[in-house]
Image 1: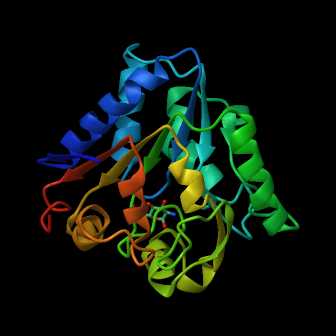
Image 2: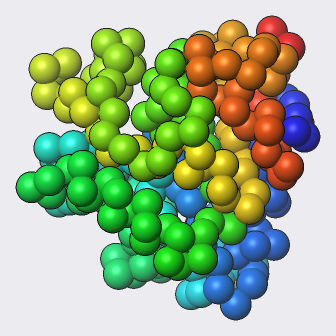
Length: 240
Ligand code: GLP
């Protein structure tokens, strides 16, 4: 693991964009994207470099890390809509280059398996951007998820639903399940960039980097990956 500590969120965004940019410059790139607040400044930085002509996203396909179950794609809080709003529209990636599981599928279990197969069929993810939950989750792999898990339907913890309720009118509107790439699926990405900012992430980040490899902290599975860069601000890194 490479761990880079930056003074603030803006510096984290520049460093993360620097890590992703060389892969975006390839003729084709499968870019894995996380939603949540942590990667948003990085997406803005990538959009700025696109607007200045420094980067071109025409060969990029994006692949969602996870998706709420029970929300149609066009729901404003679906992760499909979120990534359009936060990233792809700004860099000119068309909707048919956005791949993700359909959380509104009749059979979400089959949909999860199908998305897992799709990731393999397209040749895998070149670079996966990740955030981290306060409890150490990545994607929606909550604590005690199998480290060997493939894309599956996950039940969200109360803490995660509470944390994500800021995007919904009421906590009861937050879906209870999601389709998420599994920890083994995520680990197949050729490179991974994990972004952590703010003091709320400090204990999860310390457990992920310095704690034992354990399903109690799902992000600790990244210790086994040969090409992970963790980019944190000083607040998120304070327990290291
Ligand atoms: C959600 C997403 C994760 C994300 C996490 C942290 O639960 N499924 O992919 O990393 O939230 O989000 P934030 O960056 O907003 O703290």
